[in-house]
Length: 478
Image (cartoon, rainbow, N blue to C red):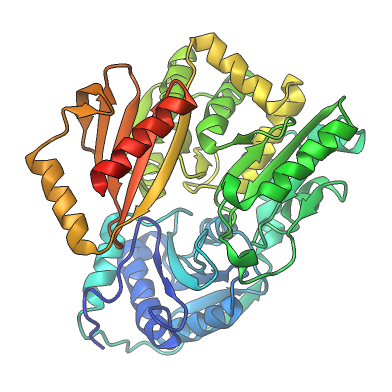
């Protein structure tokens, strides 16, 4: 069953494609059993069984594709524990670890637009598999692989019960519930029609005010990604609430399609990305929960993160972009928290996986125990370390992979010495090109590995400087 090596490629967290084009039943029939086989090679001796968890989100035909994955994996000789409903991807990672399985195969395309579906591969530890595992899957897809084992057995399970019980034990859940029930905190959530739907209500009660909890495989024509451009109605909802209820605390929490990414909206209606939430969470977990450990950030993370880590005497470790690199570090070190700029945050005391529902609970705990609005909390931290910054990112489509190659060659042969009128004082090449500028701002240029897209990241002291630098970078690329 050889497949051209370029046909199926795994990105930073799984394989994705357009439904009916790259992502088909035929291709899943190739990928799923090979992925299960590589999980067996990698973790079989550790777990001593041939069990695979199979889960899915709420995308178009996701449950049908998941049932098909389950059947093809069973036919290859593996026992399958198949979900009986949609759930967050972290719930299936949790199940893989809790049930001592080889790993999990999750049918999801995360935050991509509705025409996409994909497959995430999770390890027996409950996190993304390392790069060498996905590379081995890609390698085996170019070869003829036969499966001679007898067909496996099938069980179904409810992924929510054990997962939510595990989350409840990690926070002061009663304190959060009481604050909501007593009207001290008003909680709004936006499920973005994804797999988080009903999750916080299950944990915290029916007073959680959730929008977009219905299933919409088209995601209102957008994408289930927690970015300001997709949640304007949600932001306005919170602003309207503030006008009608000027007293008391309120917060909005936004989840992506498979509930492994989070963003927030403070009581004033300001959007707060994970670049802001991570410093708040570090401060809360160290100061109020007494936790300690290493902080792990990707190279695109905010400069405020190392400053808050230093404030609390925590060591810092930097990785390339992609949560699987953070997950790898979580298995090797005593990590308190690991986070990425795109919304993924995970915790060493949990599983080596980004988990948006657990992050939501910790954010709520921070608000309730501090008595501060999230925006006020962030400004308090900035004042503590005398640091103010604004961050933004743009994804620039390129006309083709040949343009990508040309720009990459240009960066390699003629490194930038000046950006938007500022001198380059350092260049970090751990993943892409991160240029540190003479005013301590930075610009990062990073190419997508699987598509003709250029990602431009910038952090500076003002929004004007961020826009100026990103505009310069866009002009340079074009």
